[in-house]
Length: 176
Ligand SMILES: [Ca+2]
Ligand SMILES: [Ca+2]
Ligand SMILES: [Ca+2]
Image (cartoon, rainbow, N blue to C red; front, side, top):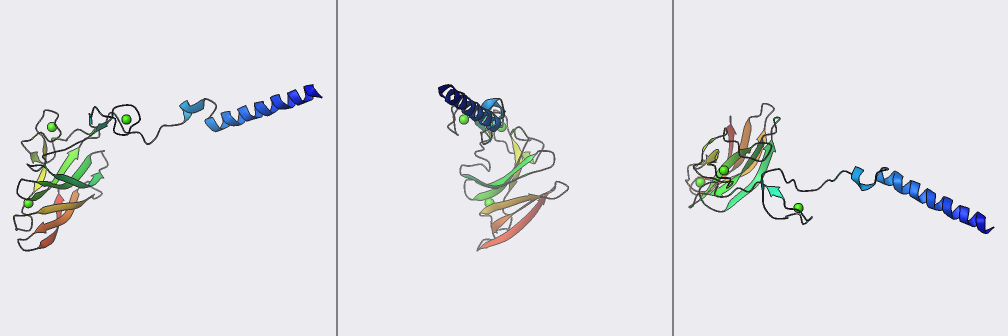
């Protein structure tokens, strides 16, 4: 009788083991893909652990985009070649301007897009390029970009609002 119980217990333990192996994919955790982890190859290494998982992480951080501090980036889009367009508004020191910056798939700034800004906005030691839009509705005041979209040919459209001097107008601009 005791032997029979022992055999049943062993069989039960074996069944539990089989179920655990089935759930974990026979090889344990190493077969479960890790998702939700911040890349440490996109952009530059921050030297900080921003997702608090024990290792330092990477990101693209842009500052002084339109010539002064205070930069806001509400919209981005990715074309079929993996180029990443980041659009928003930045202060030029007296009012805001719209910016569009194109990143390569590794997060570096694509210097072939737009004009030279004469500034190193990603602090990698190199002067960067991009599109800065000012005085869109002729008010020579705040120009705020809110959204960006690409058409099927990769042409870029940005929209937002711009001061005409007394109130704000909507703009849509195509960048070729
Ligand atoms: Ca981390
Ligand atoms: Ca402006
Ligand atoms: Ca740079």
